[in-house]
Image 1: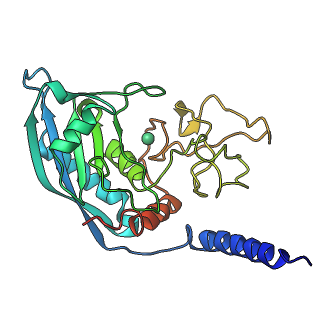
Image 2 (image 1 turned 180 degrees about the horizontal axis):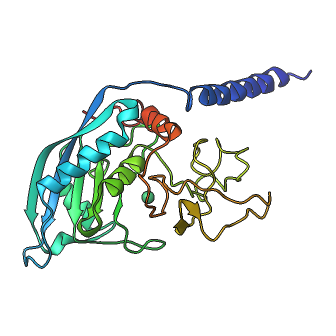
Image 3 (image 1 turned 60 degrees about the horizontal axis):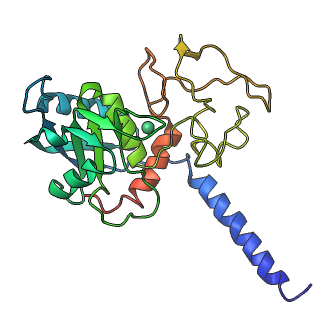
Length: 267
Ligand SMILES: [Zn+2]
């Protein structure tokens, strides 16, 4: 045994321990968090009135529906302010430019700020998204203007879009995520370390077509030969199913972990 062996053993042991802790806590709680997050809405209004304005009632209704999707961890969202901003120029948001301006001008600290615009212009891969949010993690982010800023496109606003962006904000990846953590196998063997890091969302080959709640056409993983059976009704997928869209228990637990750590500063 050379003099480094104890150190190597210690490192090995602590790696195994931390992995085991993560797996044990992850996806296993039935915890009720009993937390209400405060939401403030900022609606950029089109001063030419070329499109119907988004009403406070529409936003309240969407939040009510979102609350039912988070009820499994006893979390809800409360719209405390609804502000209209007559500003035609910023009604089209160029991601990375106008969003900085808007968040610097209009922002309530330590609450979730929703900004509604007519158009969102983004770089590839999704040039015209329905929304985007800062990704949550277990680390508290630095206090920048856009830390708690979720941008939403008025014409495609819905409870599912809002729930999807809140999912990202509380640390959920897409069910088809490959860039951040690598490709998840449909066998599920590597589900905790690849894809969306959540084990009760099956591997998703980034489809958008589904028929009767199944991927269509079917698609097989070239490595295992298994056919994908992605969660087409999941809020964090890109399918547009006829079914009610939901978060899984594993996703709710992952968000809960991030609510208690990286988003713990929220009122
Ligand atoms: Zn997304």
